Length: 255
Image (cartoon, rainbow, N blue to C red; front, top):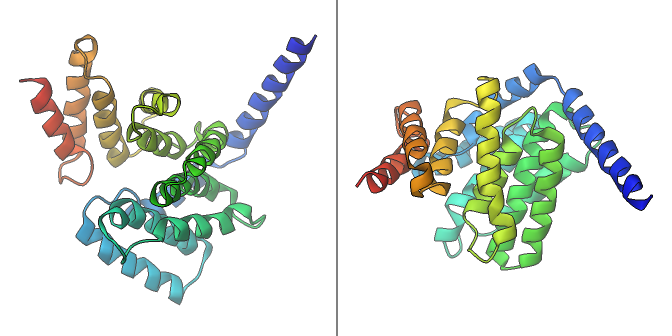
């Protein structure tokens, strides 16, 4: 009887999560994605520093809901790409990102179509706080937040799985229970993209194809890895996403 009860609970949770995704307007999610795209996945540090100043000024001039999300995301990108290479100047940006996004996450007034972005980057920001402060319990909490975001929003947005996979792939080997999400999440994004070509944009797919190949370097997957690396390269004409790393990995795999 207890197992039947557990099954009912799991089924109810699955239905609830599916309803969460169904309640979001996909076209509105995509509209917000276009408004946020220029602050997401910035790999050029010079461009990132300029964008940080620009977004902070925009928020000061117009503290709108979207600009607050943009600020939270650019703080995340700053923490990810600048804080670990600076002793003082960019420290604390992970916490600033988490706090900014938490205000939005916890507000009942937040537009629901913004939640896939807020929930996903909030979880990733907490993982960065854990890395910066060396508090492993925060990493565990971050993956709990990721799990909730994936359950609620992965059917309509690539971000929960993309960011969870990105964090997972960079963890040390002894985090095996979390590292498994790298293979799982990038494969899931590719599967969804094959069913709906509007699911993720070229930049995300370039990173995703490269990340998949990085996770599958053995002989068994070599041919598929090369195919995906070629896709990562062809999608990224101006080296704004995964092209450079894809070219380097392809060279290694084809030697």
